[in-house]
Image (cartoon, rainbow, N blue to C red; front, side):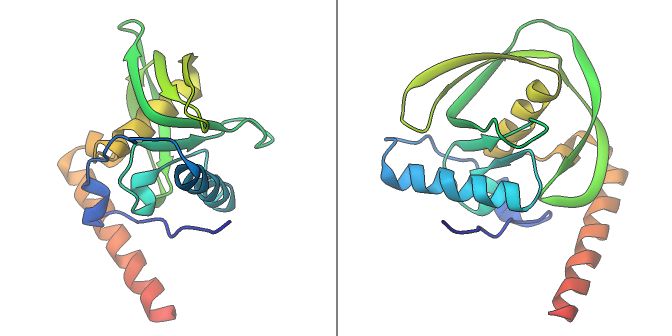
Length: 171
């Protein structure tokens, strides 16, 4: 297994729209395993393939307390189950150390393929529903900072660029 490098905002590659997975094979399963390892290592609860510069519709997620209930979502699609929504503070491995309230659907119905290519459905609410929507946004080239005002988004961009310059100087 290998750790992937996580792209950070404002990297333009995060805006790439991911393509559907044509066939779930050993290569895709290897990507899934590496993504899970990368997500756990980074202490995240979700990771979209776009965030690691793989532009296929793959998401891994684990919102459990003990990191022992991973979800694999290949070619995920979700539908809101009603019009109810809620604000929840979100963070992102691609926007480290920044959090903001984002309004999302409270309940969603997910359809996806598992790591073996078997289709499944899942009804989600709360944190899991928020995470599904957040990660699916990544596959469409959208980040949670896009829900912020232009002023806040520009401030986050400047913070991230400064952070990246400081990391480059230390390297």
